[in-house]
Image (cartoon, rainbow, N blue to C red; front, side, top):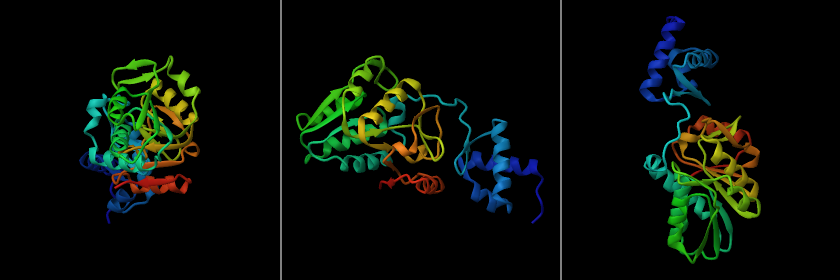
Length: 262
């Protein structure tokens, strides 16, 4: 195979990223017949120029609006079937008589919908910081008791944050916290796009005996702005079939329990 000049190779790599939206190091290595080390160097070079975004195991198209938070309604239709599967599995972890925390977000909203559909549940108390989630859970009262944390309303996610949100979370001890996020990374742990909600999420993790992160496949291997928790604070990650296999493998090698819901 003829040796391709580095600049030409990098242009072709960038074209592949734009065409596919996500490329793996292993695939690029096979495509160009060169080592994974060289491909990683190319990707780092392109990321340094701002041409693409590095993620675990490969690269994705660079977001022209990095770390921009999407409104709840804007995110609701994305990965809808996958989120529904995640929601069903997460809801199956709840037993009658338990007390749980349900974080804000569209994936946790799918958990709320699945909990409502579980007619076998009774005497379950659900604490939530999401007004949309509370209204969904209201359908299952009195089988479910719904407690809204209180706090300052954030319009984008219809979520309640500090001040005041911390008061109730510091006073409770629950069985399981179901936490949503924008990224689950082998090195940097669980991260989120905005500071106010991340602070509440951290308190939710601290208040629970078990932490279950619910994240569609696009979040696996991703890194966002604010850390919620290290992986050793997470008991289970529930994700979907779109999650990149290399990132899942690395998470498992780090000792993280993963469930791919279907």
